[in-house]
Image (cartoon, rainbow, N blue to C red; front, side, top):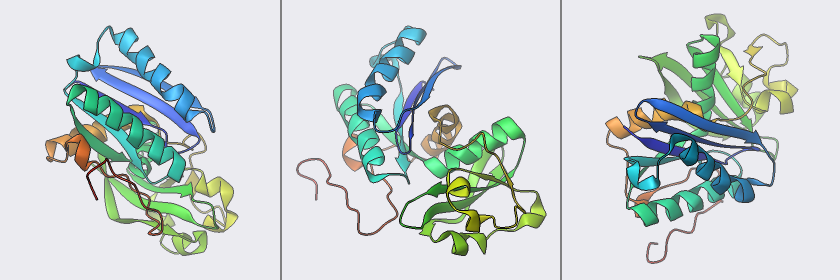
Length: 228
């Protein structure tokens, strides 16, 4: 499966390409520069792999949660790429991506992911490893850090990932949970196995049907023309 995936949902901007089993990736922390950086990064990985978009089977994107502007940029860019290629698209959770990175880099199988959502809240979710891929336990939520802290079980050897732990001491007030300070942002490279699983489950859709995830109900997404 040949797949290109992009993410701009947080302060980081990343692109990953899997072509004939080999992975090419770019990752930068570049706040407020995503719209300028993402397409050059796409071009760079395509050149590294010596391929074109027409050589791919699917496209993917970090569907959120994350900043409204960041999620919107990734959604718009992937729409443009998909419209030009007629490729089907799969969305991947940013929270799941950070959990997948922790599993790959730190050999853990249980993760609590928290992204700073501003407004004294975090995007929060729990994940467990199954057959090499992180699976969501319960639901993704946007909640106050104190509420998220009440959902954490520190007795099972879990790890925390994401910017939420840095932003809010109340999320881990006694430092009972080990926090992976090298996994602050989602990275498209670790979205690849998640995207492949989602594709296998039949979750790839046409460009008109892609859905970003904001979690906050008051934020809405304007779909492509003709779709309400």
